[in-house]
Image (cartoon, rainbow, N blue to C red):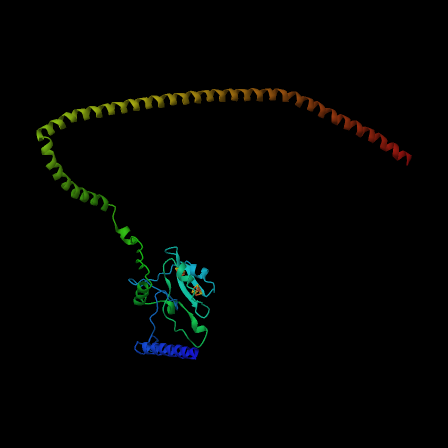
Length: 320
Ligand code: SF4
Ligand code: SF4
């Protein structure tokens, strides 16, 4: 009996508790959102559709084509096309493709991006009718300046600084047009501008230091010393030039002596050559005589042979 009464009390308590919860929620505002009529408030770190932010101030693209996002992507759904700019010698972005059909929204690409160019937006409404339409190109991925500014503030990212403009090259025509006489003309201007400013200061400072008379005396005392030093310099230069002329004279003498020696040697050589030719001539003459003698003997022999032949021929005719 007591047990039955205890159980009924407990059940009534649970019913009252349930009714209390119902009453509590009945008096409260609903927390469910009627999407798509009401858009949910998403946190800044929500990882939705990927996009390329631009500089909110200038609208310049921030991607430097470093390809880090492409390399780190585990799904290999990023495809970057770039080329090396001939002007800056740096990679320049041509196209940027992300296949959102493959992307798993891990956010690794946004983590490695050095310029915070690629970001996860809060956009998650990407349903489409074909897989091809999920491949976003550079135009589709690029955010506007306002959108970029919104996401930079929402994600608490440091605002990118504007690109430093390349130093303006001096125009070729302008450089050519600049006459050489401009420089000398410019210098006097600068001097004229600088000196008048400097002189009054010195004029203001000097009166306190020394009187103009003392200054003149100092200048007059300094001038003779300067002239003496100049005279010494000129005397030293004259001595140097004298020494140089003496050196050149000795060199000329040496060369003349050498030329005389060579001439003598040449004469000796000529004489030796003449003597040798004479001896050759004298040695050649006996040979000629001996030749003549030899030549005289040869016809004698031939004559003898002709005589013997003539004697033999009648003998042969007789035998026949
Ligand atoms: S979020 Fe992940 S999967 Fe998607 S593109 Fe970036 S790195 Fe690749
Ligand atoms: S990491 Fe950033 S800067 Fe480098 S290619 Fe990807 S989006 Fe461009």
